Image 1 (cartoon, rainbow, N blue to C red):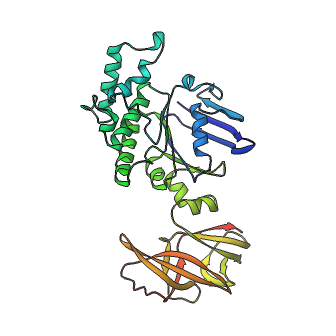
Image 2 (cartoon, helix red, strand yellow; image 1 turned 135 degrees about the vertical axis):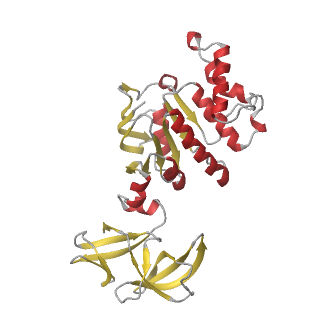
Length: 346
């Protein structure tokens, strides 16, 4: 099912939680809504679900205007962070609940419900646990039951709100891999909300980065990480440092001095952004340099924290990766240049 969001605005007491948001989601696509608290990602998910309605704009399911249709009419599956399972019901009863409460001719016969529940239990790898209660399951198992329950009604769209937020890191990583495989098997159009960058980059076909009720950028994991379209996206996705610079004659100047990096970004003031891994230590006068204030091991590399003097003000603080074999002493000076970077207008 294709979803088209057109110029959506959502106000709460005159505060715009979403402001002119447009997004096209292809049928069968797995989309991540990523952003900090208050960015509008959960509000957008609730509007797609029909749990809230837009102040302005339209939401289409295929060619159908679903903007003001009820949750029931939209036929969406919803999975919450805290499972929302019925504690007094068994696993099988939880999964089949949405089918049992259907009215009249739309309710399948009991034999069909049992068949569907059994099929879903196998799909979410919980066969044999149908008679257990939620308190007899692990957190990861409960979240899979919640997903099976959402799938039982054969939804047109699957919506997940921070689905792994209540789980520990190891279980979260296992479920991320499992959810991607599950999505590839079922082919449902899926939208999930997360503030976990690693989760979004690993799982999604496309990532929608949100801030302040607007979409900052939409793209693949490679797009938003390697080709960020704004200072916010560069700062929010992954680790980064930035420094005020001046562009002059194709050179990048920091504090009036060339840093040995050529740019075609124009002339005038700007902000230079770079990631810790995109830096090279150099022995040259035309480079960035500063004093090492801390150094820590990170897997197969080392992170050096560097303070760069700022002419009587608080120093600029940046972080760079250095090879394990490179001796780095606290208080020593390091000279470096970014090997990949982006300049945004100042």
